[in-house]
Amino acid sequence: MADLPGAFGETKEATEAIQRMCDEVKLKVEELTHKTYVEFEAVKFMDGVTMNFFIKVHVGGVNYIHLWVFKPLGGHVELRGVQQHKTKDDPLVPFEN
Image (cartoon, rainbow, N blue to C red; front, side, top):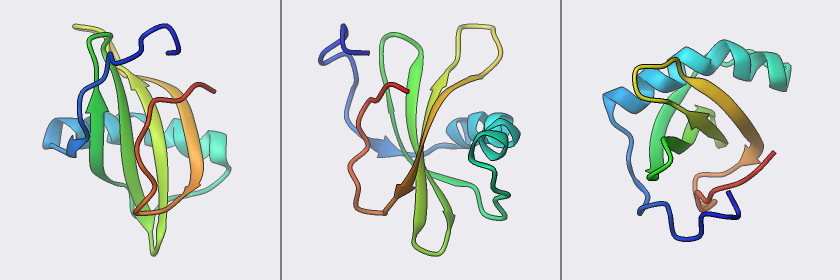
């Protein structure tokens, strides 16, 4: 991501399409974080020209996670990274794992 400065737009409210992407990667997120999420609601997202999405997900109480998801045209959603221990107020910014 470091080679794409400014390639991402502003943070926007999550849409049904963004929630569907989150639903598709939920099991992989649970596997990577060793947690089971009862709540898994996309609340904000950023997207860019590279088919990468950064998504803030509410996972219960005051807990949030940030996801890096790649969705090629006509392809399957791929989880690229997870950041745990986020809050409602943490800014959503592109990251690498």
